[in-house]
Length: 268
Image (cartoon, rainbow, N blue to C red):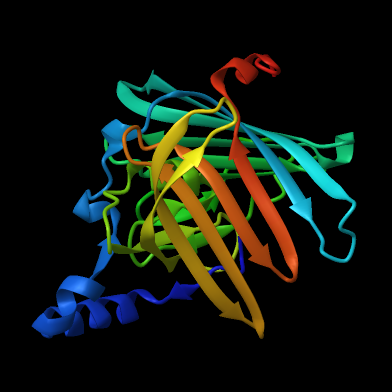
């Protein structure tokens, strides 16, 4: 998503240094910078398996109409070249074939650092080889629209397309603020995105389970457009259960469906 609040790495470092020198504010406002070298993600909390979400958009100007998608995210633990990796397949199903898209990502299981990423949207594919120092178009992938792409990184970064999985690995707690070094493959440069734990709430899931969740919040103002994102992650199992977004006058919702519904579409 391009509308989220981002701050350069140097600003994060200066802000963290300033807060550490101010004891009266540090405990309440200290930013936890999430970088690969710090190993602050708890990879063990990311459970492989199929997750299925209902995604829908609402425009206040047309209150009697909703746009729906079925969103599948399937993460598997595999071994490739003697190395444990997490392979995540995403599939978006809309009301016609033009809205269908796939996303395929490979990350090291040890620290969730990206290795490979590809997306197919509207029939066009872009694929990337990803390391701690750079990202380049994958020249072994046929009809890759990003084959000539190349970008050097000032420091390692996380894959923004896997934000949900990243949230499930955060050490969430009351009053915490995180700055995550994310990159959206093929767009701009890596950015530190700020997310705040603004509280907790017991929500009722679609199968009538009451689950105590942390509330994670992001807010931005870009080009005069205000946007917010709110995420609910369960305290016990670190599951991403719900998201509510408000941007450009539109509302978007993502709701995790019960495990029983995951059999609707399993074979891709």
